[in-house]
Image 1 (cartoon, one colour):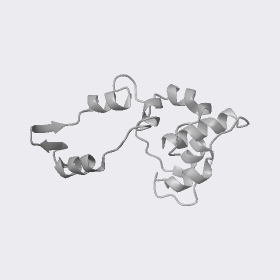
Image 2 (tube, one colour):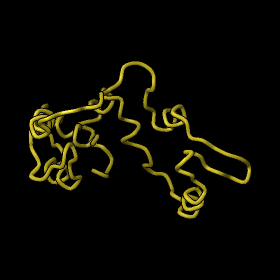
Image 3 (cartoon, rainbow, N blue to C red):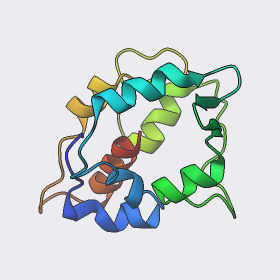
Image 4 (spheres, rainbow, N blue to C red):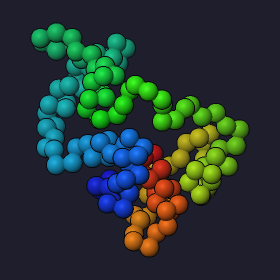
Length: 135
């Protein structure tokens, strides 16, 4: 699920407010030396980059602008607490992984279980694929 999203699921990603996140980095050139320099200057205890020109803190507004995610209004989801994670997984994805620890699902299982949708896939299959894609 690392490729560009299928045109068959674009409308679902737009509806979930996730289209911009799904397309981040497509066609962008990465500069490993710049990324390494930023990592070296990051201080996790203060969530701040310490640069020669001063400190730089990434804010929620910055993330919103970069990823195109709304930060105002109603949340897309809430924190989920469940005593029956397999049942919740089945309700949302239509499948239950063989191996689950709490609410954790292995990414490989998602890739193997949810193949790219095709013209013959049903709406529910596409919705489940989009949920897996977002995860």
